[in-house]
View 1 (cartoon, rainbow, N blue to C red):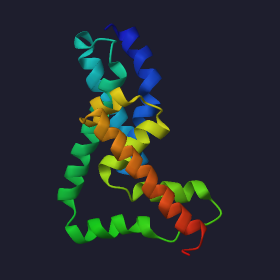
View 2 (tube, one colour; view 1 turned 180 degrees about the horizontal axis):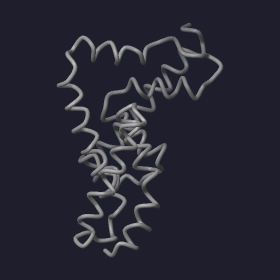
View 3 (cartoon, rainbow, N blue to C red; view 1 turned 60 degrees about the vertical axis):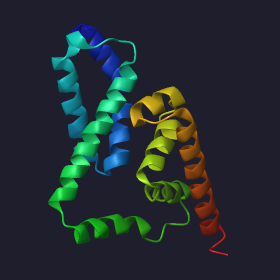
Length: 164
C-alpha cells in the first residue's frame, strides 16, 4: 500500500479506532496517543499492508494496543486504587439524561460484552469483522451482544422505574 492509499484508508477509520480506544480505556488523551502510535506503526509497515481488511486490521491493532496499556496500568496501580477507580462507574446517575445512564450501564458490563456492544451498536460493524477483532465465533459474539443488551435494558428499566 502506498502512502497516499494508507492516508486515505486510515482517515476513513481513525475516528472509529479512536472511539473504540476511548470505550476501552475511558481516557481520551491516552486514546488519542494510541491512535497516533497506531498510524505511525502502520505507516512504517505500509508496504506490507493490503487494502482488503484494512478496517479490521486497524480495529484489531487498536484493541491490542489498548489491552497492553490496560495491563501496564493494572501493574502500575495496586488493587485497591484500581477498584476505587472502577467504583466511580456506580455513582448515582443523572435521571434526566438517558444517554449518560446508558453509557454508565455499558461501562459496567464485562469487558467482552462491552467491546461487542460498542463495535456493533456504536461503530455499526458487521459480525464477521467483530469476530475477527475480538477473536471469537459469530454465535458467541451474537450471544454476548444479546446478553449485553438484555443487561442494559433490565438495569435501565429498574432506574426508570426508580427501582420498583
